[in-house]
Image (cartoon, rainbow, N blue to C red; front, side, top):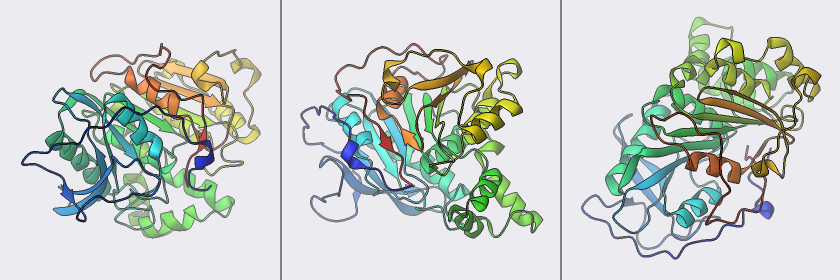
Length: 356
């Protein structure tokens, strides 16, 4: 995988941006004056906030619209090997165009140290970033959304289970559900992610009870069942795990974790989809979803507040599908699956490859 390919950057219409006016709880700027952030809209600020994890100042990107009315908050999470400065401008451009607030926290950077990779520090950093946004902007508590791709989807699924009370909706693309399973999958393919997990969790799984406990405690699989009341939209490319690094089984197992028993995919179907990169004949059904026009939806399963879509693609993310779905969700309400056409932002069905 590589960092986001901006040659396919989203064509987003931007609203006029008025200077933000902050009160006593003004963001703590990392440097004086206006800071140019490579790959990000100029309205986005680089700030620091206090994390309850260890009472340290942690960095995040931040944007809030002008005006006094309550606004939605988009919490966007960087990818596995990235950090908060990783160029993912579509998140901010959507928020600027739609009048949402936005945070893109660091949560201890790339997943290659014990401090990162789903640690308690990571969980509290992300929760503290939400609190920071609430203190520095008028956030609608019923419209706090969580989104990410790849490692960002891993963190999104983890936080969905660790802090389900926060989220109005969670959109996860090509995410990692269980670290131990992914360790096996990446080891077979000799990918460096296995080494990064060893560094984070203290060694190779199976070598000690302590290492195994770390793999378990840092996995979304240990907590995601607690998010059954939260609208969760899972997406995976059918060629991921072949051309990309996260096999489709990870998202399909995440769906089974949240789905009612009668709605779950069988182990045989998951294995077939993952290994063959095909949909079993018995599961084939025509799906017409304009938001997936660039990468056709091949399989879709829904159970209560949870949905999974397998699309014709690899380790990819459709921002327009993520944003359009999130926009319809409200905290404490059943998931909305009938998503109307987008308005106010021209997205043109663009597709990007999720960063590594």
